[in-house]
Amino acid sequence: MIDRTIVKQIRDIAGKENVFEDKETRICYSYDATNIKYLPDLVVYPRTREQIAAILKLANEAKFPVIPRGAGTGFTGGTLPVAGGVVLVLTKMNQILQIDRDNLLAIVEPGVITADLQKEVEKVGLFYPPDPASLKTSTLGGNVAECAGGPRAVKYGVTKDYVLGLEIVLPTGEIISTGVQTVKSVVGYDMTKLLVGSEGTLGIITKIILRLLPLPKAKRTMLAIFPSIEAAATTVSQIISSRIIPTTLEFMDNATIRCVEDYLHMGLPVEAGALLIIEVDGEPDVIAREILDIQKICLANRALEAKVAKDDQEAEELWKARRSVSTAVVKLNPTKINEDITVPRSQVAEILRRLEAIAKRNQLVIVNFGHAGDGNIHVNVMIDKRRPGEEERAHAAVQQIFEAALDLGGTLSGEHGIGVTKAPYIAMELGDMGVEVMKRIKKAFDPNNILNPGKIFPDHKARGARE
Ligand SMILES: Cc1cc2nc3c(=O)[nH]c(=O)nc-3n(C[C@H](O)[C@H](O)[C@H](O)COP(=O)(O)OP(=O)(O)OC[C@H]3O[C@@H](n4cnc5c(N)ncnc54)[C@H](O)[C@@H]3O)c2cc1C
Image (cartoon, rainbow, N blue to C red; front, side):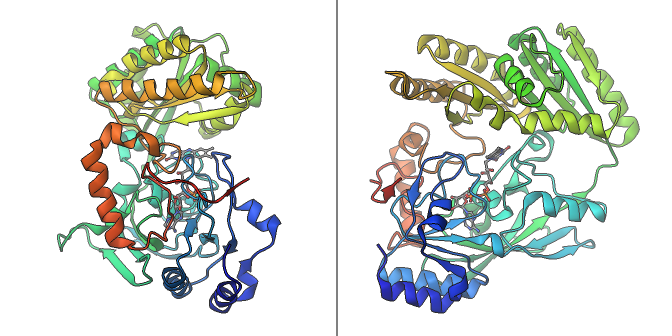
């Protein structure tokens, strides 16, 4: 528990109207999308970087944990207060400070909702591509801290490809700016790249400079239905190797299709082995050719149907189906162990074969969907912990899933990060020395380990009150 005098000091810093100690509020900030719960001691909504700096200075003197939080949609427990402490909720720092049309950039506070920035820049003909499926709730600070991706990553890359610079409050309370507002810069170490994806363990992001693109003139969206996973996966490889880079190439297996149909009742083909949602964007005449070429590849691979959406509304319906997947699959079993391995694109068919074998071997329901176009498969092990032995078998399956991904030249996580749930596995990919070097970086930034302790590194023992 945090000392009474500390609570009083934090109230003086942030204003008592922004500091909450009641159990109801603390419960609201005890969990994220993992649904694992640890109760914080205090919840604070800072309004300025100076308030954050003062709280971090105090945390270093009094040695209490501080955990930054955006919208709490993280899938790996990054914002859980596993050692108790103060949760700093950044959602009130939510101003779009500038949209610079001459230099194609935006400057925002961390609490801006991803979709809100996208809407604002599109009004002036600009484009912010990263589009996590959580974009209507997630914050840009959370996106930067996790290096979020989304369906458009196939063509446009992920959050790190758009962050030009950051303002950061260091764990010791100093404030630094990293990066630039120019297209180029090579001054010193690339601190911006280090901080993007650092999961709130190296600093608190208080300002973000984002690169923007011109808004593509047109887009076409297609739904292709396949008799088998194999046929869909081969289609993905052939589209990429035919040198067409679609904006998105999303994949759902049969179990996912059934869950989404059950949830939305929109007429999805529940007998299909798999489906792909494919989008292209750019100059109208170019994409008209590309979508026809893609249609031919789908049909050559035994697609039962490859239908282009007739208008924006029909396309939006398809995207609604895709964005509902995470919520819809929970009907299969109450607990979802959600992994997001990524393999080289040429290995998508092979990883799907191996995943099927892992599900059979461990007698588990495993549902697969995701960003097939960049090899990022969301593997969802759906379990009911009340059934004896199921949780243990699921953990064995997770280990096998990671081994399969690494064996095919892939990675443990394409976009969800490590947080607490994947921490036990990171040495499988990084090796012991790789983990050790990262620990040294953490120590250089945060000598007293007060900022978001218990994340990323495997050897932390949770001390907080797990609800
Ligand atoms: C339905 C659903 C769909 C999703 N789809 C995708 C997807 O397609 N692609 C994808 O990449 N992710 C996806 N996610 C995961 C999640 O939305 C992203 O990781 C997102 O970036 C988290 O943003 P947030 O604001 O909710 O952050 P939080 O969950 O609040 O925090 C995430 C991490 O960021 C840190 N953090 C937050 N704000 C700051 C800050 N200002 N400074 C420093 N650290 C900070 C936290 O400490 C924590 O470690 C999905 C989640 C859900 C629930």
